[in-house]
Length: 164
Image 1 (cartoon, rainbow, N blue to C red):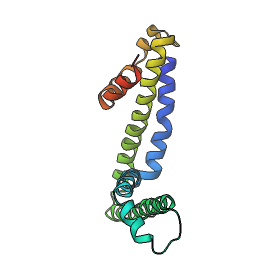
Image 2 (image 1 turned 45 degrees about the vertical axis):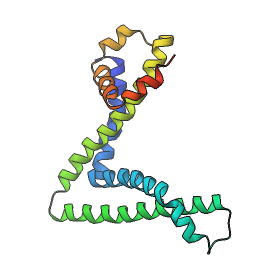
Image 3 (image 1 turned 180 degrees about the horizontal axis):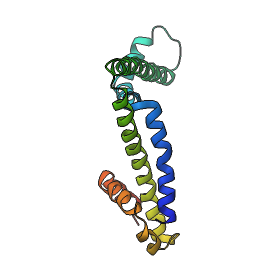
């Protein structure tokens, strides 16, 4: 095991603890609330700002930002309540251990994707400036698999990063 493997493993350790403490449902709901909240805010902020216009005496831009924030916070709070209810239900039927186990897996996958993106950026720099010799990277057990997953998940990133 190389130094790179140890560094990569150390990056995944907090993910395990985060997965155990939060559980799958809480993490999935947090991610879903961010994605769904942003999408709904972009889609409906113009409509909500039109509804708010008679009640608020602010610029159209400020009105749009307020509408965006109201939708985002509303979706976040609604899904937070749903997540709490689901977590309570899971604990009630004694599947809390499954929630924690899936939480670990979900957290590791999230960190793996972030580390994969960092590796793609590192590859671009390393190709130009050879920060770490390729022989050292080849000795790593974890570097290549994480990079390969990142290549599959983020194929467009390679094109953006390696443009000359």
